[in-house]
Length: 167
Image 1 (cartoon, one colour):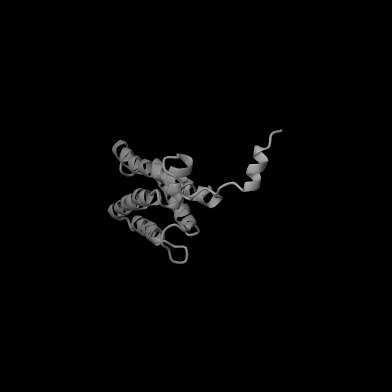
Image 2 (cartoon, rainbow, N blue to C red):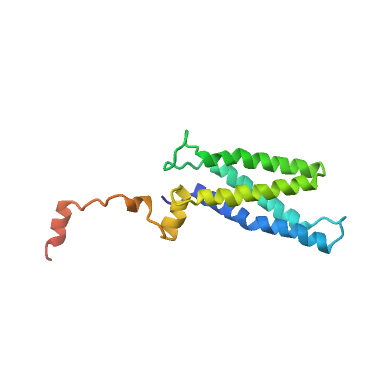
């Protein structure tokens, strides 16, 4: 498997969300301790919007990625069930925020980070999955890739004859 542009977008957005999520969580706590409650934490908001954008890109690009190795229905495997979950939880988090339910917003975002970034990342990077084969097999060469597990095709006899002739 090679790194297609779609997989590169999906992987980049997912890794970006994995990194930016804790920044958004930290910024809210850091600003709350340093500033008054009436001021808005700019870093939390900027990191939050960046994280939401990356999660949207990750979820929407996942629609078009299929893994022929695992059981699927019309190209969709069990991990694709996270797409509507992520979109629904993002909607719910913003709804909580608009209604002033900060606790609901915080809990929704934390659970979305845990489920959408960490748990999904573990399942997606499993060695038998497409992205797992790409990362662990082709990039890091820690496990054999699917191509390496297939028997090698012996060279054609005429090529061997040509290679053995002295010049």
